Structure formats: C-alpha cells, structure tokens
Image 1 (cartoon, protein in one colour):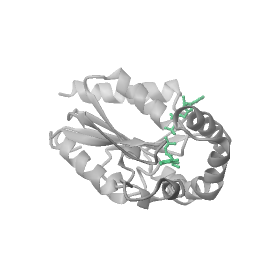
Image 2: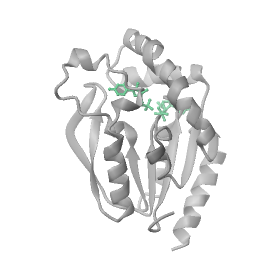
Image 3: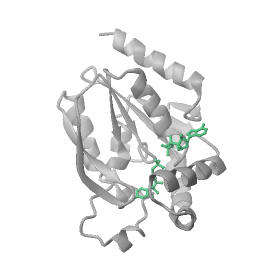
Length: 206
Ligand SMILES: Nc1ncnc2c1ncn2[C@@H]1O[C@H](COP(=O)(O)OP(=O)(O)O)[C@@H](O)[C@H]1O
Ligand SMILES: O=c1ccn([C@@H]2O[C@H](COP(=O)(O)O)[C@@H](O)[C@H]2O)c(=O)[nH]1
C-alpha cells in the first residue's frame, strides 16, 4: 500500500454482482471510500455516428480509456481530487457530465476488465473477482439492460453472442486466477463481512 491509500479492485463478468458488492462497501463507509467505475472510462465517441457506436465491441480492452483511469487512480493516491467522466450506456458514449471525486483512504475500482491490464492490476492492493454462473449473469443483464440501459431483447441477445460471451472467456474469466479473493455473488453476506472487516481494520490503523 502506498501513501496510506488502499486500492481494492473488484472484477468479474457482466452481471456477476460487481456493482452490487462495490456499492454495499461504499454505503458501509460513506466518509472513507471513493469509487472509480472502469465503465465510466469507455472511450469518448463524439465523432462516431450512433449506428456505428451500437456495433462497437465494448467487451474488448481497446474500447476503454484505461490510461485516463490509471491517471485518476494515481492522482487520488497522491491526495489530488479528480473529475471522473460519466458514461451514458443508452447513447453508447460519454455524457457531458463529470463527477468530482475527493481522495479517500480507501479507493474501490470496479469493472469487467479491471484485472486484465497489468498496469491497472498492479495498482490494486487487494484484487477481488466476483463469480456467478453465466446463465444467471445473462438473465440479470437482460433485466437490467432493458430497465436501466435503454436496450431491447434482440439487441442484448445479439451483442451477448457476438462480443460479450467470447470476450468474457478471452479477457475477463482468465483474470479470475489473478485475484486474491474469489467471492460467490455480490450479495454474499459472508464475503461482504470479510471485506468490510478488512477495510475497518485499515481505517483503524490511522
Ligand atoms: N446474487 C444476486 N441475486 C439476484 N440478483 C442479483 C444478484 N447480484 C446482482 N443482482 C442483480 O443483477 C443485476 C446486475 O448486478 P450488478 O451488480 O449491476 O452486476 P455487474 O456490476 O457485475 O454487472 C442488478 O440488477 C442486481 O441487482
Ligand atoms: O456502450 C456500452 C458500453 C458498455 N456496454 C456493456 O457494459 C458491460 C459492462 O458493464 P457491467 O455493469 O459489468 O455489465 C460490458 O459487458 C459491455 O458489453 C454496452 O453494452 N454498451
């Protein structure tokens, strides 16, 4: 751990429960935790027409501006606040909003490809992989993407079969073996208590 800041990385397949787990931790320590979502660092595509943006492979590492996320994590580690981009899934593009994030002692970083880039992976003091069966993940994704991300069923199925599933096995699932801790579902109370206790200990070390 450097500069007394601990970065906890939370990876796992789409729909595994990463955000659920991350947000539970954030809510448990509202004053001491900052969160960076890798999804907010999908590349800005202002110059790409909407019909083309729909066809992009968003499960490939090249679709993300990981360099910017690394810069932001380094800034937070050094006590400097950042303005993080905000992604709009329904537009497949960055929105014009940003979120101001103040440095905190604990930084949670979350995303499907968080442990894939070695530079990002090596910044993590604790690497967590959230595990869930593929059938459960796709079912959750269907419900979520229809309700929250402005998507329709045909499009979700087409995207899952052409890019999401193959990229998962190529880039996401192999990072499971690189994690320090593999947890079974983002709603796992035992795993939550273990990580919450660890964070509590770190905060009490001050
Ligand atoms: N163990 C679970 N059982 C049932 N639903 C879940 C579970 N974990 C997550 N969900 C739901 O599935 C959806 C996707 O979860 P989310 O945490 O956003 O996954 P991820 O961030 O890994 O894509 C959300 O609507 C969430 O409430
Ligand atoms: O414009 C976009 C950007 C991303 N996606 C999909 O999002 C998931 C990652 O988010 P999770 O919350 O982990 O599910 C990824 O699988 C991309 O396919 C998108 O559909 N459109």
